[in-house]
Length: 415
Image 1 (cartoon, rainbow, N blue to C red):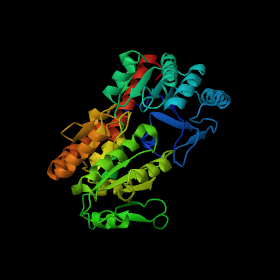
Image 2: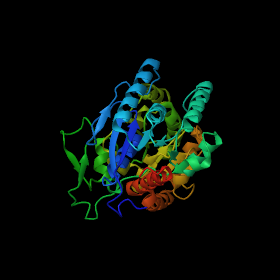
Image 3: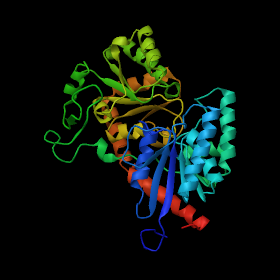
């Protein structure tokens, strides 16, 4: 039944629980969901351990942190239980591993009728040592019993959860992470006369100052100290081991060794625990002058705009929404053949796929696109066409989540 078709249907209270509302794809995904839900049908709140600022109503439980701490975790479980018991939601929807585990059990103890979880990826490989991974898989299986539905980002993600016996196939619902397309395309007016602007990166320009569309690439390159004719290969993401940045740097060394591409610049946008280590690695590889560490950026559109090739060398990815963002900007993609990435990047059509950890294969794929700019542009064009489909939009994502909510409400007869 369509909840908007009648005024007799009651408003459903939903609580979303996430460990942190910081910067990144998981946070953006969650906020787009919460903001997009039909307010006539759903009353929505968020519980989180920390946040950097949002107009959504947030309940803060500072004890909820990513690191394992038995005392704080038990306290978090108790506070979650008390909050949920007081609010009496029909649906609790959790996000990420820590909030997913504690939030689902708190919801179960509080008698919540419907429990839904979105892991935004998984920890089955690429994150932890073997025994630690086995322990987390066991916890995921255990908690899967009390979960009505688990939203995975791709069909391949569903296959992996089923293969690891987290639950039966019917429990897993693939829904792509949605993108706000308008952020990654200039307005339909002439780009040189557009007044649309977006924030400058931290530490550059006056507070609140924006950039206008239509900035020529050569001017943007100049600000980064890159000659206008030089090719730029870049990646965006947290500087953490699972993202594979070390392989990106090793591939860069092989590319620079080719005299045709010795001036190529390699950009890494993002912050994380490996920043200093990766900077030292760039020095030891002898490629320091060709590599720019940009730190965390607010101007992702601008960074993507100046790239000739976007690269994602991850060892594990749920879906990698940043690839969709690059594709919306018409950029050819070179990425690891892991997780749900092959559902987004069609090998030899919208980009090139390489085995994870294969820096030689990564360099060969990048060189191929640098050598064949027409093919690279064609891949970028096809990628943009694919990324613009409704199934990859924020609206499309929210519609599917609402459909799942209604399915669960009808099954439990609580709406």
